[in-house]
Length: 458
Image (cartoon, rainbow, N blue to C red; front, side, top):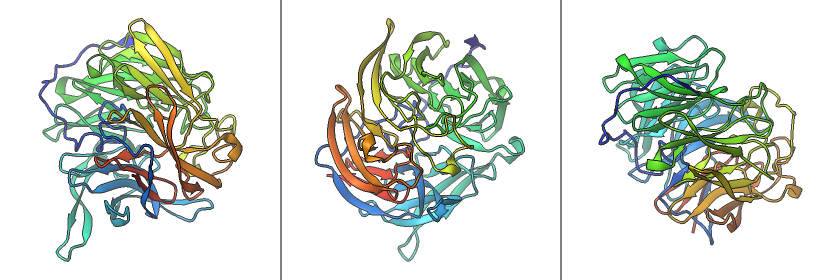
């Protein structure tokens, strides 16, 4: 770990420009805990509605008006799918039918980039032109719904040729942070001024940003950075911690290096920050957010697959980590073959508790999480789409054209025991693709699959 100095303090009463709690960010909140205050479907869950949105929807948000809106990638064909342009889609809150859409220029990741919903129910996302778009929705004079770009922030002059924004997130000082695939970190200040700095050459970024008062966590293919706004509004490094990183992509991950978005948690809600590294047997590493000193580390998994593309879920001083090793992504989502070329997706998920005296494994389950799970602080359950046992052939070392049942599953945070298990679809149409679900205030889980948008409730 290398310390780079501190930045200015941030007023504790500054509120970031985000929408309703639990439904406005891809990883649940700015700290990326992948948790929500809303209780989910749980036992007795059933499919309340579904639709074919004509694209793969990487993240779904629900605004203060109750309208679900998603970041999606339109496609044509299924063998293989031909990816088209990113779109923002608006859905009927009762039926899950798409009711409006707007196309954006292609971004840096499948599904566009990591975006969020602001306090005016606008989807904030960067497009392929180097522009941050704020996409709003409204009813027209004839009663139809429409999506439109309400505001644009032009970043093109600040981006190197051939680079693309992969994540945007608001901070606690009225600004918007962004990172690019090739290591540029920038911030649009509250006054509209854009400032940026470049991380070391060769370090790439494919994960989201995590934000706390006075700090932003950035994870590259080689190191974890704690950053702040420094002199002149320029992003500056507070500390840097390199981690074990492979040179090639593991099966079940989207690229070389760690697949986790950093997770703030622990004392004060953000006193620690956690990642899973990219070692042959990956380790969970927990750092102190202020100075980068190590709190603890331990093997992330025992019996689960040895790798993950998912951010650790957090609640209090506890982390829950799903394994994605061996998961099969569409060819458009990855930069070429993995090493080894394929592996059985055995799945698995584990809870690890963290204290000043070290890390301790509490449980490890065999559930094969096939979507990015959401931890509910409202009901104490972890909600996701899953495959059945490996023997069913779904999600093993098979191509994307898999055939088999897909289940809604809820796992007890305290014990790791399964509390709900209900079939809601069939692959390949409902292949979950490790996409992100959102639990609304009414307890419904909005979860996209390869071919559908599902509304699961009771």
